[in-house]
Amino acid sequence: MVAFKIRDLNIWFNDVHALKQVSLDVEANEILSIIGPSNSGKTTFLRMLNRLNDLEPSFRMEGEVKFEKEDIIRMDAETVRRKVGMVFALPLPLPLSIFDNVAYGVRMQGIRHKGKLTAQVEEALKQAYLWEEVKDRLSESAFKLSGGQQQRLCIARTLAVAPQVILFDEPCSGLDPISTAKVEEAMLKLKQKYTIVLVTNNVKQAARVGDRTAFFLSGELIELDQTDKIFTAPADKRTDGYIRGKFG
Amino acid sequence: MRKFKEFIIEKLILLCGLASIFFVALIFLFLLKEGLAVFKTVGLFSFLGGKSWYPISEPPHLGILPLILGSLWVTLGAAIISVPIGVACAVYIAEISPGKIKEVLKAGIELLAAIPSVVLGFIGMVTLVPLVKSIFHLPTGLTALSGSIMLAFMAMPTIVSIAEDALYSVPKIYKEGALALGATHWQTIWRVILPAASKGILAAVMLGIGRVIGETMAVMMITGNAAVIPQSILVPVRTLTATIAAEMGEAVVGGEHYFALFAIGIILFVISFIINVTADLFLHKRQ
Image (cartoon, rainbow over all chains, first blue to last red; front, top):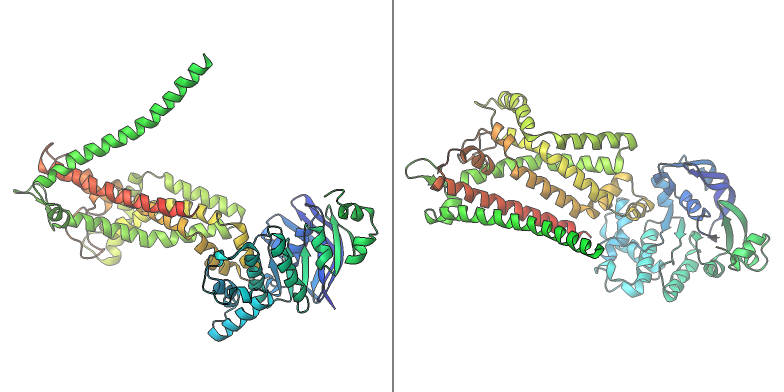
């Protein structure tokens, strides 16, 4: 099944042509990794999928982005963002307790019933592999958690609003290797229920978790294939060069 | 030679810095010296809590409670009017308005700040005062309410510009984080941006109130200047500042009345100081 269908997508910010003629499909329940040097348009692509680019006044686009056969430009932005959650590069807990951080988005949807709220928070924390570490300290401030725990808290917060897709924007760029491993473990388990698009600067991370990998360069999609193929026998020599660390 | 020049310049700058502190200290000492003298004849509590202010009767009644209450009424009224409007205006400018309207609004707010208070007072006297009089069927429109409305206009630019800065300094990623959870624009403003900027907004409110308490000319022109304990917001009141301005000219230098006016100055100084320090605390905690 196809989650996202993108055809001839072009994006500009003022005169800067950030994405050029990008066409690709994101399959349901896969992890699609997107790699590429900075300024290659990979984050712009990711932010297109939950319409965060709309916040930029200079943003302009052409082409087609369909989410489950619906044109996301025609959809209500809030609806898109509820179905397509996002985890950012910096863990960003709100200055609230652990419980309230996860309950935040749920409450925003109007769910106030205590039992339902508690169940949803617990479920989300379990899915993000954080429950065991925090179950006895849910009322503590979220800032007391370590960086890796904070990032998993943000994942739980995203999961709690029950999205179908989760976008990860360099989720491990500020984390140590052990925390990174835990976040990656969570991602691998999550793909059974969710579709995941992962933008990463860490080529090895893409190799570890991605089912398929896309390589972006200067706003163009150079190559998209099974992760094994990309990392062992890439079709384009620019992909090869980037993976081997010749530029980037 | 060059070193010598550096030395002279450094010392000159140091001197300028010290001078400003020195002058403030001198002013403060002078205020204390002149003001504290009144307590030889009146006790602190009968000065602050005394219900009548008849400084030139014989013997003089030097109770400033009516004046304190006058300032309080006017300030409270101004705060109730200006804080919601000012904060809402800041939210609109910082979060909602598109580019061009934003520029126009910001220019308008700056223009409002540039109107001299005496001009505002004059306009208030000829427009607002008769209006208040006819709406509430009062014998006079020179009331605390008129003063509050006028002062609200003066506090607004301060509140708007500082609150707006506070809103701008909320990290963009907070906003994106909330939106990415599916929050609407208004939910994001109400539940994320405003709480995150709350300390800066409180500071803005405090500084706006500070501006109101210290204002003299406009209140003197439109609050009626009756030094009696106000029973409602629809009667004439006299504020601390207006009392000093109105009576300093006729007080005998070195007399009790004169000392009492300086003591009022000390009270005002203390109030402004507390407000500024509180605002500062809020601003610095934010960083």
